[in-house]
Length: 450
Image (tube, rainbow, N blue to C red; front, side, top):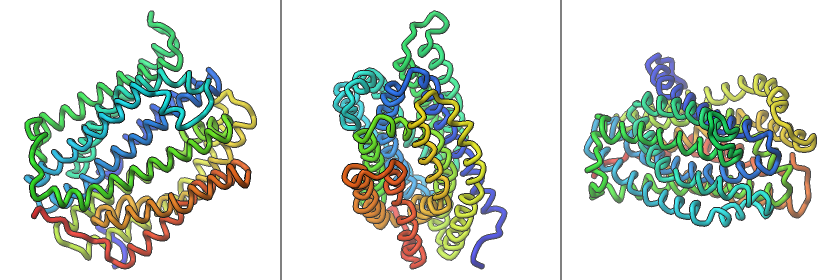
């Protein structure tokens, strides 16, 4: 049979998918509330927060690579119920996470202006954003460790604790944003800087709750702080082979999105602000992407770990079909949300029109975008085909979409809509490349502890 009708499969997918979707919605909600609360302070404040958050978004892609790389290994080990190599995988992933996050913390706290200057040459935006960037940077190490712990717990179906942590952090963020942005309850009125204070408080709590649980109570991995320096041994080669390509792939993808913001930042403040405003709603489209791709990577990884290749292929067929259908179904409600959403912002008509164009382009590309995400970040990744994905990700972005977008903006001087389309053309292209790879069946790679 081409697809699955097994209720257990759909139940397991939903159990993994829905908490991830809710967690993603919470993350989007945090960024949306930040944008909304500072939206009344004008384009400079919006752009300053956007560029600082873009640096954090790049950091999140690295964290996603670190966590997803560990999932590739731990999900297959969990399928075979091999807990000892799972613990070693967790230790290696957390050590690499700590080292990389420490570098980000150093740069963002000591040289925030240098980081912002990478995105824009607008001195007013840099001056406004540097204190915000410095405060946000103080949480990089904590966010990285809690993110990797979250991915590790997802690989064994433990999704409740990260969801609770994110939900409480969301409400803490909103509350302390309100307090410090507007100077409520006797607190100083910090405006843009107040949004950073609220974010720091929320992320500190999330770290204590999520990573604390993983290192003290979680029993599937049995990881404790004393295991942090656990030697990799024979698994080190497997980690380099299967996990590090995921880290490089997601890092390059995050860097490409960062360069997209750089391109916008050097075209005009209006297109940068429009991209920031559109981005908050566009991130809704990534929620299903992240949920289904994350669930498919774990389910297929577990199935391959159990040794059932034929079932893994049928599961892959089902995920591809579901992702395309979801992409079609979600277009009309998102289009209906566009105008009410745009009325939330006090911006110039030109900026608003650019944002509308960006949103429409994204929505009409959704079916192909979702298929690309589910195959690349889910099916092939769960199958262990990480080196191919590194090649596919980097070639579509760095050799096609980024050069075309840069030429459209700086040489051909095309309209913002065309610049935006060409900078996002990687998704349908990557979907085609990865679908061809999927059809060959060569994406299934079994990972062994020795």
